[in-house]
Image 1 (cartoon, helix red, strand yellow):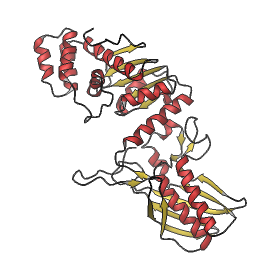
Image 2 (image 1 turned 180 degrees about the vertical axis):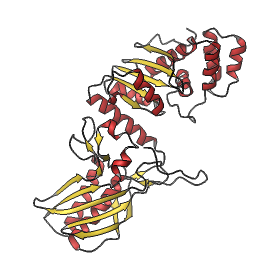
Image 3 (image 1 turned 45 degrees about the vertical axis):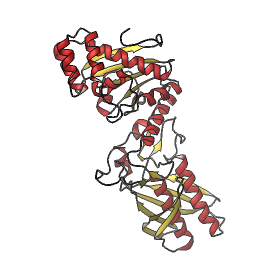
Image 4 (image 1 turned 180 degrees about the horizontal axis):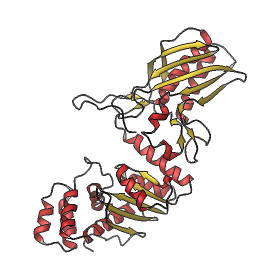
Length: 378
């Protein structure tokens, strides 16, 4: 998610805690307050990560049979949109035994299939649901009560925070999701981003999409939507740098066609066969780009200039100015081939290269694996 902190590069990265862990803490604290009338200053939560953590509670109140506790989420040094969000639990008695859990103000509600929470329910994911249920049930058991309680989790600024996320695309409306599988937020967590990519593809699958469009970010996605207006919103997925990961899961979840729309900076790496295109994962091979340029008619002087270039975008500008537009189609062809090989075949792959301003540079499509001896010279 976008937003949150800007860490000091000279300091160690600091971990934080998930919305699910915070919701568990406030639910436990509010249940204790309801049962005892004593205001708790902290709530200790056993996290799936394997350790206990004490959360500071604020705004504790018991009024008209409703106990309320809040805490402020600390996401550590992760650029999380929910950093410093206030998470609140309201706990009250109910006529039936056991615990009822729901979302209040600022917690989204699921409106599309394909998510781990059924349509119509509050967007509180399975692990946080289990954590909250176990913590509240433990408090009830410790005090020997057979009465049931109703727990409502709220995030006052949740609807505004959700605008910085992809929740609406996933069909989560009205606020944020209560998330977390380990209770801990690892700064710049690749596992969290990968999970969001799989979730987005699952929503596309549940919406009967057989064609998804993978982009590296918001700008390329905007251009892709203009190129393919016939596709539903669910079909467009920001894969970030995880090209190979997204393609494999797209195939696994039954996609028949996968389009990739992006810019030369990252897709030049895909054409080389690099399936993780983060700036630190692998350098651009300018020798490779020069050889592709030669294949499409560039002379030695231009090829030499490409080998000495600083960025793939600079190379793209050089080839555009020189009029060697088949160069871009060739890059797309190589990118398609590597993507299809990575997926193991069984899906049609399309690659579209665009400029920073959204102008199409080239495109290619491959639906079958070629001979294993395929190479850029063939």
